View 1 (cartoon, rainbow, N blue to C red):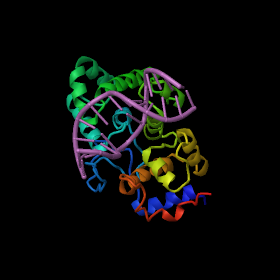
View 2 (cartoon, rainbow, N blue to C red):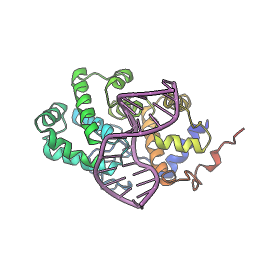
View 3 (cartoon, rainbow, N blue to C red):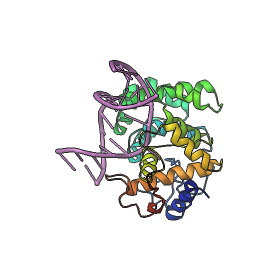
Length: 238
DNA sequence: AACCAGGACGTGA
DNA sequence: TCACGTCATGGT
């Protein structure tokens, strides 16, 4: 097995199943996740089960841009308070009829002036595609959806086999010398996709495991210095 | 008190 | 294309 696959196995053994993407109405009393109230569903890949859950994931993917998940959870609960449900038509109605309340609801996630517009954009897009699975290209045309958000939506809201590259992925695999500092998003994405079976469950799990491991050893500089779990995969520079 | 969080966009070279 | 500034609240 290749290194990418081996590292996945080690992370899975160390941290077990992560149960991403968390949903605020899924109460997992056994959750031990750092910073999360609840919402994770380990070994259950059946989500989203309906349109509300699907759009909750999409909302969360915008709100979590450069922000911690605890803040996003608060915002989702705030939205849940002023909205009847997470159906896109309903969210759109709330957003249009009470713009300032909605803005206040997502304030805690930062960049709220931008994010409210991004949410408005993805709402229009979501309603426009009318139940179809969006392509990556289409998603990227939506202002507010970049590479990572597009892949998050595709992988977790639509179960499409698209690997997500986030800041922790770059830090960890840069520390292990598997990638270079200036490697593009798509290049890093390809590295994983070429070395993993085409299976959305593995993609979902791997990304979540990277985040978990990243939070532990790659939050503060110097990144990875205490990462004894993966140190054996550190490649020598030529 | 600086630093970072499950980034994206606009600008100018 | 790509480096850089900007957007902003909240926790450590």
